[in-house]
Structures are given as C-alpha cells and as structure tokens.
Length: 115
Length: 120
Image 1 (tube, rainbow over the protein chains, first blue to last red):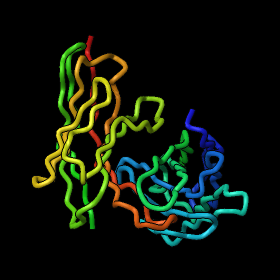
Image 2 (image 1 turned 90 degrees about the horizontal axis):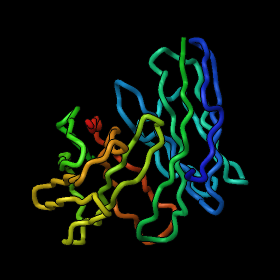
Image 3 (image 1 turned 30 degrees about the vertical axis):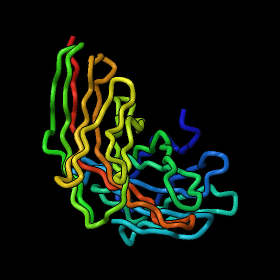
C-alpha cells in the first residue's frame, strides 16, 4: 500500500459524458501527478500540481482538467468522453522538497471504460 | 524533448535464470534520473530501482541491477535468480533533475514497457 488513494476503482460511462476522478496523496506530500495508461499511448504524463498550483502539463487534452484543493487532494475532470479515453488513470504523489530526488508513490489507479 | 525506448515488447525466462531488459533514452540534459518500474497483474506501479545520472556506479537492489551507459544513453535492467513473482510489465522511465526549489517539474517519462514472463 503506497498511501495514495484513488476513487473510484472502476468507472463505466457512455460517450459524451463527464466524470471526475479523485486522488488523495500521502500525508505530507505536496505534489500530485496524473498519468494515463492506455493500450495506444502507453503510460503518459498528464499534469502536475504542487501545493494547489499547476506546475507542469503533459499530453493533456483540452477536454480534461484538474485541480488540487487546499487539503491537497486532487481531482481530474474528463468531459465529452470518447471511446479512446478508456484507460487506467494513475495518480502519484511526492513530497517534492527543494532540489534532489524524491520518490513518486503511485495510487492503485482508476479504470475508466467509455462505452 | 526526452524519449524512452524499450525495444523488447515481450520476454520470457526460466525460473532461477538471469534476464536482461533493454532501455535506451534520448535527452540533452546532463543531470537526470532513470528508473525501472514493475507493474504486476494487480496494475500497481512499483519502483524497482533508481539510477542518478551523475553517479558512475551502477545501482543494485538485491536481485536487480542496472547497466548504465551514459554516453550510449543505455539503461538495462538485469534480474538474477528470476522468480515467478517477477512476472510483470517492466517500464523504464526518465526524470529531469529538479532545480533547487521545490515544486519543479518532476514528471516521469515512460517507455512502452516489456512484458516479462517467468516460467517454472
């Protein structure tokens, strides 16, 4: 158990719908990262938040958005869903102290199926 | 932009034998980190081993070791005495060295993965 929690575990929805994925980082971790794992694209970075602010953006679609709240949990919002959005969505967190390296701890993922 | 390439989509090894997974990467950065992650059927991402680019010594974690060739931009993973529990997808990943201040961009860039099967 990494200490990172993600809800829900599974989500099945229809095309055109909107869903929200939730992530609670490890206690004390300031950075949250979202990754998407799909058969087509592999594992790719979507977006990073640090202490409530967006820090880095990867291959995140305009239909997707995220935020990090004052209690440091994060939500990833996916709208106008398409079949190709079906994937495993991971959240990871790290302490992200000044300089050096700190390990990213991955949550168990949310499996999204778009029908 | 950084890229990570794993040229072996699938590999298999007999239990107790040794196997090496290959990874190459491309970057213009001089300071960075390289990782191997394991993803078993449970889908959980598990860090196996980490290498700092400024360190010449290859990292080792029990049965797992790496061969880091910075000039060749190569980073292979050797698994000794393979066990059935090593059956998983293995991902090679790259991360830029973070700057002095916190909150720097520390996202991981992954290869496509190698599916390793350990056979009894």
